[in-house]
Length: 239
Image (cartoon, rainbow, N blue to C red; front, top):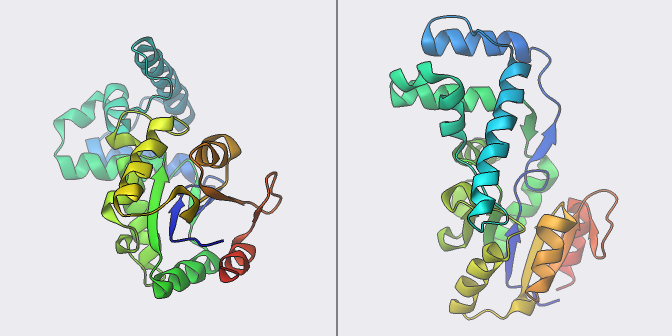
């Protein structure tokens, strides 16, 4: 197998994604009051629907300029829909945005995933990230890694792709081209790189197009090789 570098997706890969919290609506009311000192005029569901329309429009504009897989800046979408946030300080605004996104789903770093990441750290393998993400992703990842005694330092700074910093997202080949160039600069061949992700369209297929090895991280993989974290561990130990 001869793997020298592993690039990870984040959501539904390193971080397990679960359903929204049961008290999401009451929390929406509270975080709104905390930030702008008055109750919201719309429900959380109405906010989400409006956000989807704004995102669709911004994606349309980006595609008209030739960006096939665009990414948006979530904070600017939120401020467009909640203009009162423009008048609060940055820390308050950022906290609202972070708490608001927590209402849509729950996240965890499983003990199984953490164990594999610790093992990879001991093996001194080069680790990177390719994530369709927003600024809040970094805080989510940092906090959940810290619960297991880990940190973002696991991942090489030059091998972290965050879509919100680039204006485009997976499966755009430029995501993988950029990482491939940095890996090549480190002296690695494509066959020595492993992409680990949960989606065939965003992770597995584009990585294979660059000659990388892949692991479809899911309980019921549609691509071989694949499986859960324990199976990935066995796979890597055969190297």
